[in-house]
Figure: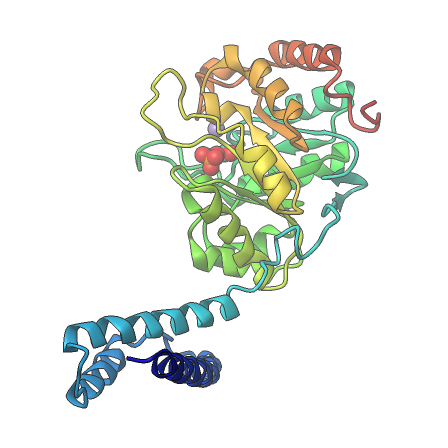
Length: 364
Ligand code: PEP
Ligand code: MN
C-alpha cells in the first residue's frame, strides 16, 4: 500500500470518526429528551426490556466484520454512557449542599440560634415521665443559663415490652415546661399523622435514628413549617443521612438540623461508635447545623465529657446529652443518663475547656 493510500484511508477514518461523533451526540440528545419526558410522566428511566430489544435489532442487522458479541459490547457502552448522561441531568445539586447555599443555615427558635455563632447544649431526660421530673431538669437549665430541653414522649424502643412513652401527655408536659421556663423544647415523633398535632406542643420535632429512612415521615416533616432535628440512622452512611435530610428540604422545609449519634460497628466498648469525622464532613458538605449526641453514641457516662469536647472541637454546633433527676429509676436509658449534679459538673468542665460557653455568651 502506497503512502498516499494509507493517508487516504486515514482521512476516511477521521471522517467516519467525526460522523460517529455527530451521531452518538445526536443519539445522546434524543436520550436526554426522552429522559426528561419520562421524568415528567414519572416513568423509570432505565428500561432493560427496551435496551434488550434495541440490541437485538442491531445484532440482527450486523453484517460484520465485527462479531455480534463485539457489537453488543460496543452498543452497551453507548447505552450506558447515555444513561449516565441522564443521571447527571437528574443529579442536580442537593438543596442541603454547600454548593447550593454557601452560608450556614441558622435556625432561630425563641431567640436561640441553632447553627449560629454560639454552641448550643440540648439536654434533658431520655423520656418525659412526669411534670415534676421535667420541671427539676428545666429549673436547673435556667440556673445554668441553658435554653434547650429535650424529652421523649413517643419512644421507639427495641422491645415492645419496654416503656413506650407518655405520648400526648408527654407533649403537654413539654409545652407547659417550655412556656413556664422559656425553654426551647425538642421531642421525637414517630408517626407522620402525629406531626401536625405535635407542632402545637414542641418547638423542634426530632426524627430519631430508627426513623431516618422512614421516607413518609421525612416527607411529611418536609411539608411542615417547623424545625426538625434529624438523627443519623443506626447503620446509615453519611450519604444516606444527607439524602434523608434532602427529603425534608425537597418538600419545602429548610429548618433542618442534623445529629450524629453514633453508628453500629463491631466495637462493643461503647453502645455505638461515635463517628466524629462525620461532623466536619457534614459541616463541609451541607449548610445545616450539626449536633453530636454523646449519650446515645457512647452509652457511657464516663465518656460524655471527652466526646462532647471532641464534638465541639471538630466543629459541631452543639451537643445533646441526657440528664435525669434520678437516673437509677429512669424508665429508659437508666444506665447512661447523668444526675443533675453530674450534669452540672460536666457543664463546668466544658466551660473550663473553652469550647463552650453558656448560651447567650459568644465563644471567643
Ligand atoms: C433519643 O434521642 O431519644 C433517641 C431515641 O435517640 P436515637 O434515635 O439517636 O437512638
Ligand atoms: Mn435515651
